[in-house]
Amino acid sequence: MGIFLLLKGIRMTTLLVAICFISFLLIKHSPIDPVRAYIGADMLNVGPEQREKIAEYWGLNQPMMVQFLNWGSALLTGDMGTSMIFRRPVSEIISERFFHSLALMLTAWVLSGIIGFALGVISAMKKGTWVDRIIKWYCYTLASTPAFWMGLLMLMVFAVWLDWFPIGLGVPTGVLTENVTLGDRIKHLMLPAITLSIIGVANVALHTRQKLIDVLNSDYVLFARARGERGFVLFWRHGMRNIALPAITLQFAAFSELFGGAVLAEQVFSYPGLGQATVEAGLRGDVPLLLGLVIFSAIFVFVGNLVADLIYHVVDPRTREERGI
Image 1: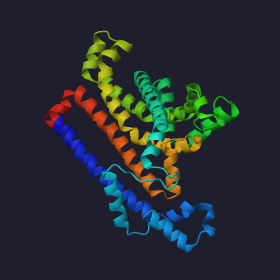
Image 2: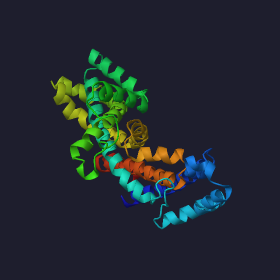
Image 3: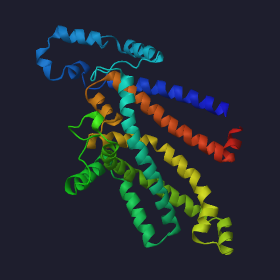
Image 4: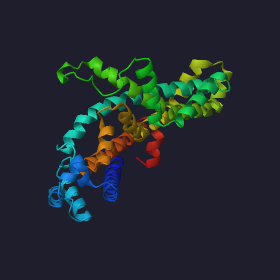
């Protein structure tokens, strides 16, 4: 286990260095001028000397490699820099918005996993029937549906037409922070969470369906059928464990897709999370904030994959034998 975690740590370190360097290059070669985006609407009232002072203050007048090394050395000391948009430390902004995004992604992750697994099991047990065809059609449709389009559709139907949920934001408008209740936060959370969970159902359901079909066609299941086992008893005794591990791995590996979908969903619903902060940082050339969000999202996704590997390692002894541990 120690060797396994050491190798994972080395892989994560090299991955973070590569992601940071590539992201820095992309930001520096983007058409967005950070100084112009920083000044905003007052661009005509700011002279060349003031622009140079702003670039000098943020270190934007230095060579690209010098900027990257300065940022990297500060990062090693725990300083992620100061956001050019919010004028606050990047670590504070990430920690503040992470809890909003965590509640959104965790809710969507749990719902998509449970619903997707249940639909996959039902579809496999009812293979060839109209139930199976409806579930497959539903999953194939969702697999090709963009998150922002689904968000706009959900917003239009349930927030505008039916008026069941608020149109956007994370809390009611015009209400002081101390007066916002947990029910208000949940009400604003539900629609974007449902949108993300609907999108994430397809992969889990289709994967579970195919795995369970393979299990049901195996020799030991045919022998169990010959002994009279049917329905839920057959699935619970012979199918559950064989399909649970791949479903868990796929669900944890879906963190990257979940984070990407959260960016679009938060933008559609104006939800104050990491996704909306990422869009603002990208459009306004906020290099420190965007790099901090890239690092955090990479660690978030890597940890999700690591947890899946650890669960597989603990539950399935065959993985330990393959690694020689």
